[in-house]
Image (cartoon, rainbow, N blue to C red; front, side, top):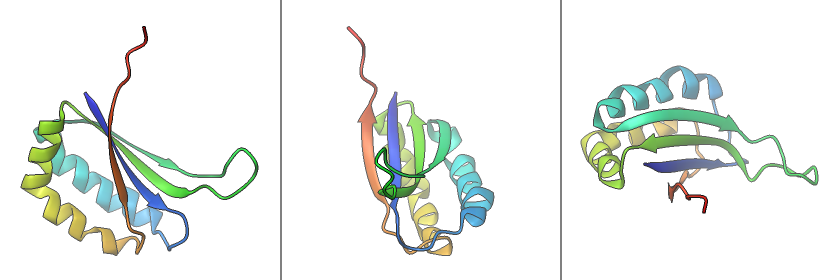
Length: 103
């Protein structure tokens, strides 16, 4: 399993209603059959010292493998990425993560 973090920096406007009501359902609909197991959304609220959160929104997408993620992007990435300007002008940062095993 891998975790794909899609992080939207704080600053630019972000239409959370559109994101939750249209974009994330689109992601789930297109990618679930291609290896997406779970999709969670978290909202940044701040840092421990009271500062602004560096990311206003993060999508945490769990895929069965990096290959499954690549196939999902190849199949429907263009449509999903083309939807981003409908909810923000922020440049998303994407990070692929492995789950660490405890000793």
